[in-house]
Length: 346
Ligand SMILES: *Cc1c(COP(=O)(O)O)cnc(C)c1O
Image 1 (tube, rainbow, N blue to C red):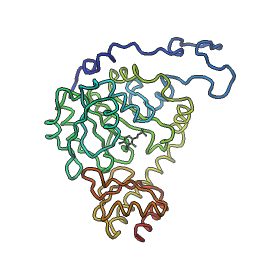
Image 2: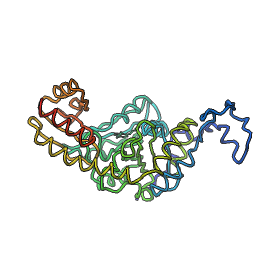
Image 3: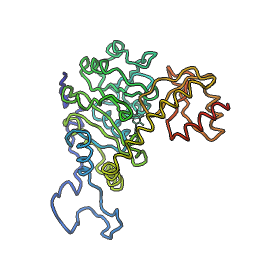
């Protein structure tokens, strides 16, 4: 159980600012003649501004996730949510975020873009949290700890008891990025939000939902946090096409998506087993995501040879704790087989 003063943690300028009020904010109700937003009146399908509050889409997502709509912020990808969280809570030139490494690169890029400090703490050799080292590294100016579970690029879930230990042990925000949660059996941290108002959960429609091209990231947190993000977001950050298409996917054929996830999880097992038999591959790390991290001899040379064959994987060999590692996305059974055949031929 942890309850912090959220508004006190936010930057003073964000607390005090009056958000932009769009034409569609100031008028609500039924009208047939819209002369308020300088739109082109001739119908193009997209001549009207999108709903700045994404009401229909949020209602649908909230009911799927079992939350209320005021606990939900939608970003132009999770990347926008990450940036807005940092800009809401971190004073440039003074505050810092803390990130266990190796992990997703955007937390550090967004922090650096905003002149916010970055405290890095190594994960263990099993890519788990060293909670003692994290707690020791936290300073009074640490505003946010970013955790990624399942972690990118390692693929493993972080131990829930470690995450809970951090949530209880700090007076700052803890973001748990669950971009890959749909590929695990583990429950989401969403169900713990009532216990920890310093907890922010990130999810996305880019992975299991198959909508990476639309750009929708979910930020789920206490309504006070969501209200602060809404204050500083660009008014029309989710365009009309994206809102409509996402709604269609979310209310469409759920069995099809479940079947895709099930196939990818089966392929994760099959691909991992096949990779273990490829000569030169020393380790296939256990994964709860839709990719596997593989350690092998001459990883960068293998990476180049795969590219010469038209196959691109992610070379992570330059990343801390990932020496000689490639990260491989799990694809269709035929594509996975194609990769295995290529690796065996190298
Ligand atoms: C892929 C990924 C995301 C998704 O980002 P979007 O901007 O929503 O596409 C977020 N976090 C992690 C750790 C990821 O690997």
